[in-house]
Image 1 (cartoon, one colour):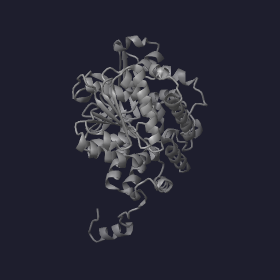
Image 2: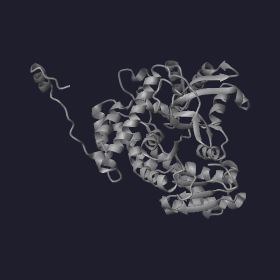
Image 3: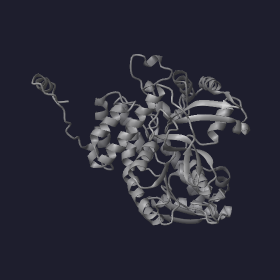
Image 4: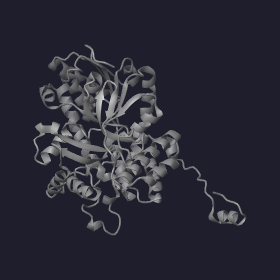
Length: 476
């Protein structure tokens, strides 16, 4: 794939995903490499599709860009000739995350986001993977050279599925570690001028949403201790009325850095991956923060509706698009598309196989790593070993995610149970079994039937093992 006078054809499946769809439309107007390409919008909701197409057309007219626009409710219509296929859809995102979080909490499992780890991560994967598998199969046949870019949570789970079980050129993304903003935010926190960013570096790695900074340097000097102290100071002024994902993130970051010797860089999610903030045990009142608050599904839905009202005002009610073009900005995924298309070599965080970048994690582990992005893909930079303790937590999460993928592929509820039994925020096998049952019952209309089917587990009764040993036989 190489740049030419003609820009790329980008198909976004889930154009009504407002957190990304609007930014892709902005980028088609403002990023030079995309301005004369082709934007293909797909959404199964005809009204959402109409509004996003209208926004694309009005912004194009205002900016003078020359990109082509097409739209369909069927993803198959837009695949021929696609250079990039971006997955950015979700079926009633806030609604189902609210169900996942509320039911899980009844079983002693608290989630502040509910879309990547714990029962929320497992069940979102189960809801999204059937359509992702269908799309990936079509991409492999219709446009096999296209980059299939996943932007759906749980990004690591879906990335593992795409890597191991599809015949596509694929990458998985998350917007949490967006360069250069990530570096600049940390620089500001410790009083450095972001304009001097080329003298600042961080070694960051981990499973998506469970990423840690192992070292940070400015002009050759270690500044990680300064970052930790800055987080500790900022944590003293955190608002106890913040929403669930924002609540106490600075305080938790400094605390985890003290314990593990590395700084979490996606704490809004990372705190949900750990058992320490679940409210278990005899020392709950002694923990640094109260148990996690639950994801506010209603609040998210209100915010989403307000964003739709704004799009509707621009498309149907004459509100000028000038403010949208002036203030929206690009996005992690569109910047990755631009880098792959132009071969710019831009550094971006992408979920890719480890391949020795972190030597003491598995070679094929899907990790979120700083990559050099060019025509041939995303190439991770060396990181080094994870510290002991933190390495074992990474492995546990990798196993949880991989078990979720294998359960889906094999259609095996027992593997789902094992995934939750391994999951760091599930406190018992009984809880894992019960939450599987309850979440399936609450969503059985959209989940595959096998999720609710318990297979007989083959076990050997203890008395039979003893009898066989007495007879000089072994059963293991």
